[in-house]
Image (cartoon, rainbow, N blue to C red; front, side, top):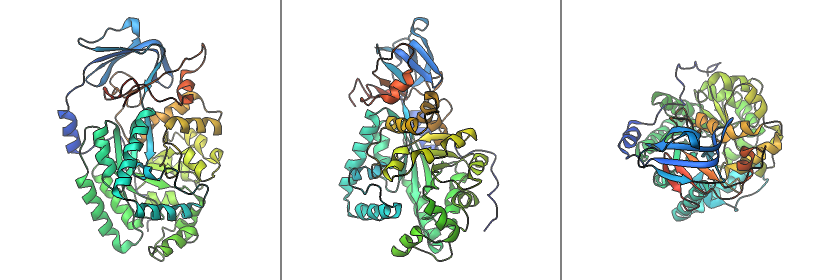
Length: 445
């Protein structure tokens, strides 16, 4: 085993496009009708708010944004006057498991994590394909109703990707792989490649890989998956440092995770990484430009390692609350100080009561009251775009950005923050556009 992280490449895995088929699909997609949308408040990006603003949209992208009286609509544009409302970038949910949506309200709360995994495995095994498919549809509808325009979704089956390809949301689908026995690493990797090859090509969808975690993926399989991602410019996500027991297993091969693997007949003696989780991932090449999901319990040196590797972090505060974890113990402020991109995710409805990103933002503000509304709104939008490797401008309404936008109906008192009004709202989103196309119209999806 190598003693230090693998050398960094000159290009980040994030920020690259999808495969050739997705690029062709995007090229062939007809342009939507031009739009001219006005609102009392227009949020261009977290620090930029325009009063009585307007956005001109052509070809699904923002052509111009500014005070309404200074702009003119494009020829043939549809005018939408929102009145006393807030027009803002659609939310970017950096971490979700739509295929677990059927488990809403059925899972253990505040249970030890490995007990929760046992129940998850049992309930998934007993579920019918129809139950899972209905859950995915309901989950996607909930994302749309709460203003999410983009989702980073973890998939072990083709069902979620197939639905996302049809429903109008932008998506980065991370195809998950597990397998702790190194003797089966090549077999598991071959299966992963087959799933990627069969994944649907869609204009708004990028496919990536997710070696699940250091306690469920052998170093050999993790390296195969990481090399595949790097060789094809695919995004990569990994669950990392979610619990203290993860480090216990990763370093010494003991604790609840070993017991779980032995119980399932999956433990390979002596094949644990022998290093803290972040370093183990880095040694396999799975941290470079990756999305590190959770990162609740970093070890000494991990924050610097994340920064060096160009990794981003997905924070899921209400999933942490589900397990009774201390929200304020997360290293969020230290990550931000290091310049690490931190985005918000909801995780799944197997460990959350909702997949409304606004509820996650409210949880962050409660746990970290020194953070500004601008910092938290960035975690809901532009930081999510960076974390998922989306093109520059995504997560904003700047000229040239895709018009991924939502409407929050709220009155903002003089001197108050419209960002806090958005975060504080629990009403359904009134409108939602993705690349200039209405996914939700006037409250109807």
